Image (cartoon, rainbow, N blue to C red; front, side):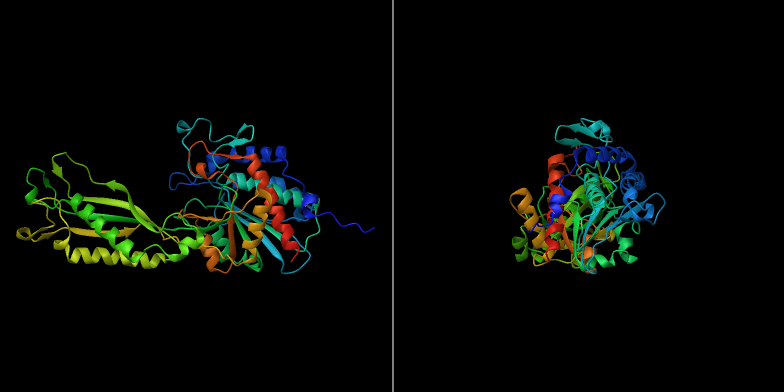
Length: 441
């Protein structure tokens, strides 16, 4: 009688709750120190990295304790990245789990119902800043690599995990995955699918939005509000100009046919989110004001085209400001007797971020969908105009990027963040199904 060898799923088993919760408790205990909001809060991701290293180094070649090849790569003091490799037997066969970042967004304990900086365990619910985004995934992928190192299943594919620094802020570069790519340390991951593990709700995320942050400044004339005919009201100028700019934007960047294919809930949008002005009395028309906001752009449009168009709109409005709509019989944007014209300027606060449309024909996508259906019971890929930094750059560099995650979307960047152990446990099984399928190729 012939006996088949045990499958990777049989060998690896299930996610060990005690081990996972113990590791996650240590990692969430560092969340206060890895909040990323410069210049006030600079994370020290090595505080999380040391717990990952403590779990994996005993099973590594560097300690002669196991097969894992572990590298700690740092481009700034206290802000390292970790690359972990479980070697397979066949050259060129590889898959990777990337994107688990060791920084978090800020949390104010006064706004939370529990301490965001220590792990709370309430049955299936695991509570704390980073449980969903993304320290819960850091612990999950660490447990996957630890189990590979312990069980040592014979694999043709090399399995790589990359834990990164500095995902939550794009104003400071050269620290995380961008620098790893620049240095060529991830080049071999192009030979197989790269699964970016940093989303939620256990389904493939096949599209994300680009983002452009903008600031529209209107300059008028400071004057007493009892003499509106002697002034240029920058508030009215800004409101009318923004209305015109938005109208032109939606004409030039309408809903794209591919948005329906990818299941985007919204088309590209441009909208204000903040007002600022220098202050003054209620009876004073200010001399200037600013409206700030963002563009969320589906990946079928280029951010550079949008910024060029926005600048073009502003230049045209300035040149023809007499034609801009006004508000009431004395509202105006030109004072000829003073040779004074209202003026608009637009600026873009940070480098524009491109969206991502994953390759729906790739082996990585098909494997992820099959694994999701097998473990979760159904597969329903989705797209969002929320932005995930860094992924588009990987795609442009030639990586087959597929996106998934096992947190709770409703708690992303929110107060009272949590994840479910049962979801993370299913994530572990999705990883095993991915590995198993690729072993069959």
